[in-house]
Image (cartoon, rainbow, N blue to C red; front, side, top):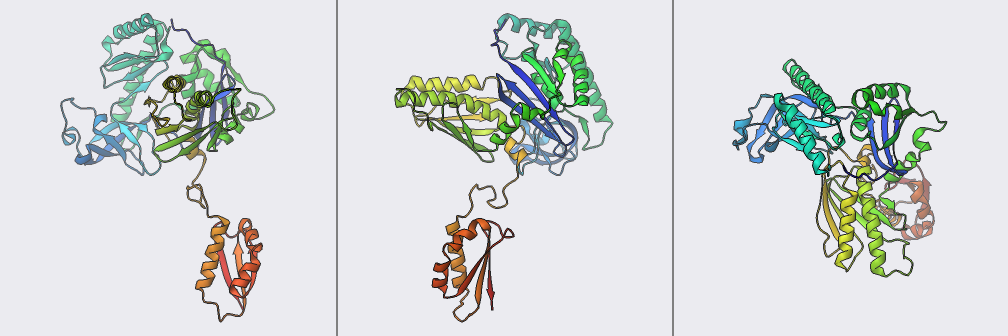
Length: 483
C-alpha cells in the first residue's frame, strides 16, 4: 500500500446567486481555487451533437458547428476512425452529424477544441466508449494494488465495449464499488447515445458536473477532514450526491454558520486579491514576478531581502530557488496558467544545486491534475515547461483588458503627455492668436503641468489655464483656444 503523507486538507464552498467558488486548503494554505459564474457557464467536457462545417485538408482538421458563435476545431488525431486511414476527407464529410466533446474551452479569439474520442469520468474510473485500453493511474505506486485493480477491471468489462482507466481515487476500492461505478457509466453512455439520436445539431447531449460536484468527485477523498458550505440548498444537493459516490464521507460535510463571509473568515478573499498582482512573495523574503501572455508565461525569481545567515551567494540562490519552485507550482494551479512557461531561476554554478531545484519543481507539480512536462535547467538558469490549459486563466476570468493601456501594463508618463501637448500647441500656429489657452487634463497629470505652467507660458507667450477633470483619461488631453 502506498504511504500517504499526512496533510490537513479542507474544502470551502461559497455559493451566491451570481457565482460559485470552491477553495481547497492544504496545511492552512490555499492550494486550488475554482470559480463558476452564472453568465460564463462552464462548457469543458460537455458533449454536443455537431455538424461538420468545413474540412481543411492542408491542416488535417475540420471545423464543427456545435451551436456556438465560433466553430469548434477538430484535429485529425481526435477523429474516431480506422487507424489505417490518414486522409481526413475519407474520415469525415461536410454536413455529417458527429458527437464531440469539448476538451479545451474558447480562449481569447480562439473557439473551443473538441474530440470524438469521448471520455466519461467517474470517481473511481474513466470510461472511454471508443477505446479498447485498460489502464491504471501511474500514481498508484504499489505494484500489488496496481495489478489487483487492473485484473478486477479486466474481469468486469468482458461484457462492456470500450476502454477503462482506473483513477488514483480507486486505490483500496472494493470490486463491488468498481462494478457499481462501471454499470453507472455504462448507463450514462446509453442515455447520451439516446439523446444524440433524438436531438438536432447544436444540442448539448451531456453536461459535465458543476464546479462543486466536480470538486467532490475529484478532491473529496479520505484525506479531507471537512467540507464547509455556506448555502443550505447547496449542502443538501452535495450530501445527496456524496451518499451515492462516497457515503462514508457524508459526516464531513457541514454548514458554515459563522458571522463573517466564509471566504473572508478563511483569508481566501485576500488571497484572491493577491492573485491579481504579478508579484508573489516567498516566506524567505524573495519573490516571483509572473508575466502572462496569450500562450506563454515568464516567471522571474528574485532573492529580494533574503541574504541568509552566513550563507554563500550560491547557497542563498539555491535556498531561494527551491522555495520558488514550490511556490511556482502552487501559483500555476491557483492562476490556472497553461501553455509554455519559462522560469528564470537565480544563477547557480553547481550542477548538484541545479538538480535539487529541478527535482523540487517536479515534486511540487506531481499532484497537479493538469498534464505537465518539464525540461532540464539550462546553463542560464532557465527551466522550460508546459502545462495543459483547458480553460482561461484566473486572471482572464476575473479581469478585463485595461481600456487605458490595452493590456500593455504601461501608460504614457506625465512627461510624455507634457511633450505631446507642447508639440500639438506648436503645430497649431498660434502666433497671431491673442486669447487664452485652456488645457484639460486628468487630475493625476494636471499637477505636473501646474508645476511647469511658467515654462509653458514663456514658451508660447500666452496666458495658459490648467484644468483638472476626470472626464479626460490619464493619457489624453483637450486643448481649447479661448478668445
